[in-house]
Amino acid sequence: MTLSKRIASALTLMLLTATFAGPAHAQLRALKADVTPAVPEGQVFRAGGKGTVTLRVVLPESVHVQSDKPLDKSLIPTALAIEAPAGLRIEKIVYPAASKLKQEGQTQPLAVFGHDFTITVHLAVAAGTGAGEVSVPARLRYQACDEFMCYPPKNVDTKWAIRIGG
Image (cartoon, rainbow, N blue to C red):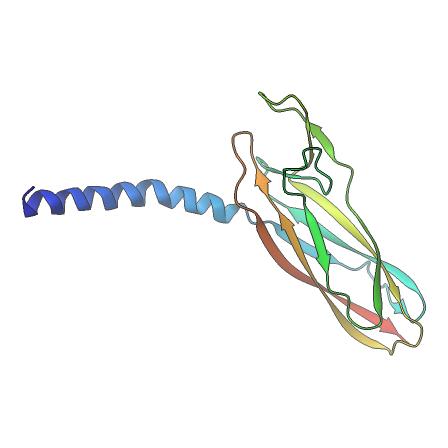
């Protein structure tokens, strides 16, 4: 092959890669969950008391994620991991009710969360915990899927800022 043919082949390959890889890369980026941590307005946690926080998760409308308890154990569950700071204890993480999704070619339905769902976290504050602002970091792990395929699993870091009253 002559040098000019090799250059033309390389340019064609680069053009094809840019044409097809660009949209695929953009779609993978678009599958990142938009997470919104929330503390009920005006809620002040008290030493020795309890409270709740929520995490709203929004994905593109065309995708879903596996529930926290997939029916098929080989699938990747949606999981919220929380690093409770000193003086706080995670009592319970409550995921929404899963929907059953029947997919063509599958004998068993999937247990999924839709593109917009909320996770509730119940916290307990240890007696004697001092007043002030506390950051509660968390990581959401999920795998977005559409009707054709599942995409690589992703992690999204977030945190709640809670106020502990005196």
